[in-house]
Image 1 (spheres, rainbow, N blue to C red):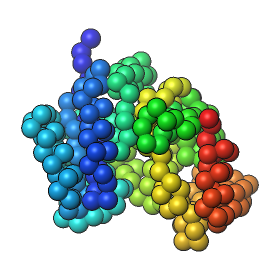
Image 2: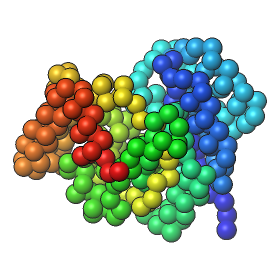
Image 3: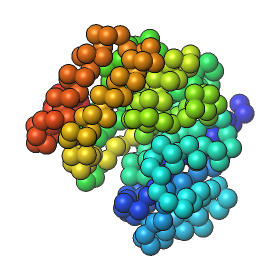
Length: 273
């Protein structure tokens, strides 16, 4: 059977840790099925430790590692849009620069696309960890089949962005990443455009949990942005009035409660242990 070539798309910025980037790139190196190219967007100037790690892997991978330097930091969505322009293959696997992919990740996702050529995107469950992968906190599960995913998307993000593999043309067909949150908005645009989704019902990636992330996802400004995004989904024709009302109430409560309570909700109610 002919080998399917695919790209890996990543983005790194100055606020990230070099040892996390090293672990992430190492997990790609240890994949059963290797990508034909790795497109790494340097989202603005980087500090010396990050540059050192990148240089090490550049020597190791040679032309497989394609660097896309940006003069200034644009943010994840804009950086990924730029990176997509440099992806040579239609199948693109996303990977964050602080997560760790399991060795069989790409193999299993490619098999799904091989047996389901109509699919535009394939994700999986992820396991959240803190410190090291032996310290697992929770499993973020998402539904399997397209119709279930569409229904789920009316209340919550239906795929795990750090572990998606998608068709480049299906993403470009809806204008790529934009809005807030960039990934959630992209999935809804793709659903409305007729793209077919599938989620593998097992974890293929270790996701690095950060209390700082939970802190950033709270507060008045974040709550306002969240409400605006839900109104946008409604105007796009995706949400029903009942969905809009429910989402605004529930999401606003979660964003505005004290950080300690938001962490409890996140760990014990939103995520599945």
